[in-house]
Image (tube, rainbow, N blue to C red; front, side):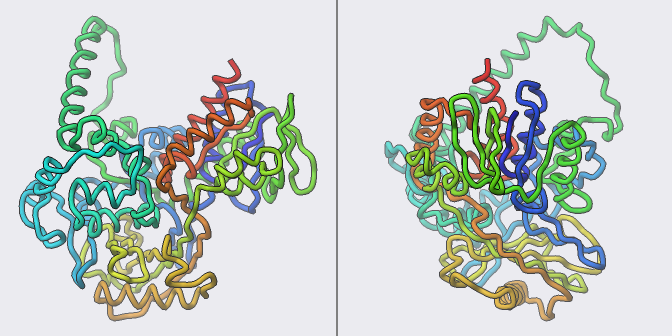
Length: 487
């Protein structure tokens, strides 16, 4: 019998993959709140407008997630945004009192742009002349500044990381957030030369694989019809050149449908069941849930690392300390609905570098990517993150947050009207921060669990990625690790 802690997208996904192994059954999900989905939430307004307080679109290269969408029969609900769509091409940075569009074409890369006052191709020269420094890890700010320049670090990378995780690049780990680029520099001495060499090696490997498969060309394969609706989603995304995609009716449709699916297949989802303590015994795991003792053979935790740390602190203080050392930030999300199309530009949105000292992280143009009504505009303003207490203190009212969101939305986008309606959500401790040394900390955590033979698997955003696709993959790998231990 396996307990899965947390009914967010990672916990639900863990149950989905665990169903493939009968030895893990029966499966029970313990969710402390009264709903599934975690930070994924779509709030439907009386007029049918949807406000997203969490993720709304996903990158098209998330193959595991597209396959899951297909398994859940949600393919018809997918709304693709192709690479030539304004929401895919146009992404703005606000700095020096001006909106700057990030270069989105070859011409934009080789010509001088207003954001950096130089071309992106100049980054090649910076990278070539930069001295390789052997490091186990360093801050994103230090890495980018060293290889590409201070302007790239402050004006481009800093706001992008604000949009991804609300984090401060002076604290965030280059090794954990920019793994491929960081490791490429450490191995080859140059990011660009390393990427070129790796690309060339991949081409050679693909060529060898094709040659190996030549002997199997006589094997029959399923014929794919010309109608794109008959293609698998991963293939459709590639063929139609999707950039990102969303879901009709709101992104919360994903965890809701996944919960319905696994429930029909035998998973017991217990709402308002709060796990208060975990004790690992020789032949079973004892959980205190709502004051009652429950026994399981395995535990999969999708809880934030800090929450799990509290549950095991008494028995495993060393492991608890490591888990507790993964910090989080709080994000305030303000959804604004305007009665007309008030946007001066068509784009995915605009991000603001921390150096501007403006109390918002960015603005997402929801109805540009996912139109709901041609006569209205829905925007989402993100605030706080690593700077929540700086700008809003430990306790800020929803009215104050709304006022700040409207003020800067009107100022940055030259909007001269108040929103028709709004919603304010304060997502406390919602995004983990992979600070310098995060990779080494994860190694110590997994080594401790392995050395003490603890029947515990970890998944969720605290460990190997904060995006939806990352946490679904982490759930799949967590179940795989349990399966290997059972062999």
